Image 1: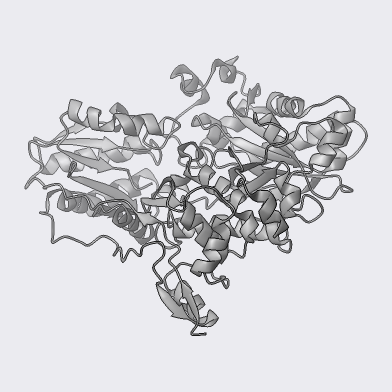
Image 2: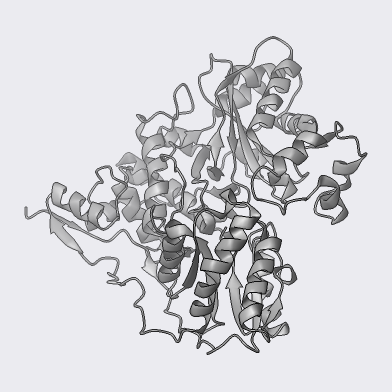
Length: 101
Length: 453
């Protein structure tokens, strides 16, 4: 016997690589959506992030994380399902996801 | 199709690595800005300084830098089910599986096509049937992949219907497997009910969770191997378990004891017929001490069980809106004592829910110990915002008693373990991850012929 002829234990991959979104050259005039799990002192950290970004990009606009709901809370599925529509509604150009938690 | 440019903020190198790995598995080149250090251990002045001096530069760069050359997502090298990926000795196969992170560190049974086919005989489902798509790898869990991992785990082929029921439960979105790599590092608890328990020789008695009994042990091992190989939860990348746990031997409920005391077995309490075989899986974040209760008064036992419930469960869970499906395992002697006093399983659950109350002062203090709420959050504030029901604010007396659980919380009462010991154990579920999920065990039509074999 030449040995054990074995098969792979992995699942069959079904995902496809997602193309990268083109980045803006500057955040000036850009609307930035914020997503958070509402933990890790989100209110404070996003406030500091907004101030620091606004200092460099005075015409950047922000859509607070509380507009989108808790991305990791008990209503997570609903919040995630509604996300594309809300990002469109608030005309977000880019997204900051999470606050280091 | 591309979405919006996004930057994810992670802490330190560990989280950053996990975020990148999870993105890669999903075919997305996630951009990450890394906060220096563990933000939960920093106070506001330090956080502000780190954001301004370190983080903001990264946020800007990751949102505005043009996409670099395509970063290949994890190489597929995707073999078809029956492709032989390697030929070698037992030791060589095990070395390869360790190297590829296809093994759990223990020797595996080499999954040859013949062995896999032995398992497939124990189901009428087709090998390429997709049970579900699993995160984070975004891979299809198939009947074939269940059989392969069952072989590797040291299961017997006749366990296949139970393994399929486990995988069906894992694939159920209500179970919440996609968060299975979260930092609490939970492990599944597998509870088997119905005639299949005896047919497979599953143990429900003394020492049932010790390694030793093949069915209990190898079925428990299967869960973890399957979780490594199909959704691909790997410590150091997609599995962020802070400590992690060893896989947990499956358990069977002692249904003879249940029948004697007039208690419905777990699967019947969950809506299945008594003669159906059912697997229930739930996440276990931690197990309590196997604590002792004593005396002839049922309430004396129940009150001490509730005391342990209060030690096990943190108020922040309900304060964040989490609803769990915790498990209480009673030995037959304790269950019988309660049953003789007229308590049913539903009564025990009700007793826990009614008596698991803590002083508001403690609840509020405890919910603020970690970083689950913005500083300054109060119980009154949560009630006013509608995030907690009115029961949490019947007065402003800080010593008033408030519930520990939201009313939708469920307790699964299971009878198992040494019939002569007066011990109980609580298994704390990990909020919305690994909600108790039950699936019927589907036996093949030719099972009698297979049994004779």
